[in-house]
Image (cartoon, rainbow, N blue to C red; front, side, top):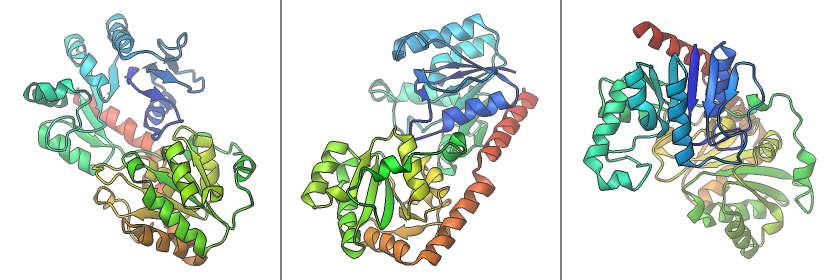
Length: 373
């Protein structure tokens, strides 16, 4: 099959999610020819993948991306168009006109009670765009989503839509056995840590930085020379708050795009700590990467993860600094208990969320769409 992959975002491993990369790689590895239109990409060369449009510029604007997408659909013959999020609305009408099956890779629901509109225009004409989204769901040859809650939300808006659940995958398989420079990370601390805690602060938690840093202060009081690596926090604000708590020398703050440092820290961590978005409704892809690490996962309890995380594969904590600190200390001081939790997390990934499983599910989903067509 010749497949056109469209996204307004980046196709890169240096982000929260490996989904765009995993979709392109899985389709290419299955022997399909994949053309990619994206704002930016750093994918390694693949004989079945062709990048369209961004090689000569650092980053394409949304207007140029829309024109590139429409041009690609018009000029070439494709057996399917795989569009991520808002990109599907851009080409849905043209795909219908040219009778090209459209695979809509949904990121969230845009209208309704839990909707998150992609632009303010959607709030100006809510009824119109609700009909637009429903029509897209009904006309798409297949709708992909990453969790059960999103599948229910989309099916509730358009019961006739063909919705397939396809969970995200951890980042580690894409880096293979490539050695990660852990010595560079250790050099950021004044002295070697007795315990290393890696914390992922998911989007939405940035304004509430005090809670995890107060928890870090309590852990450091109980475990001398314990050190923390925070990913996703606003670096300047976090550094200032850490200095006020007198733990700045025990903390390193990295940007969300610094994937190599994050994976290096996770591979040597004693504890992985996940702080979900308090108003988040869907499973965040970061959780799969953290479950796949050799460190036990301490996760603040959240309704969105009820079908994924349990007391067997993670250590649940209440959303308070005291509870987070207690769970992290327990994970450090009870290594046998922590080993069991970490093993269950890795087993869950191996059985249900491995990249090989993702490739098989995606291929079967495409095969089912072709047979229905």
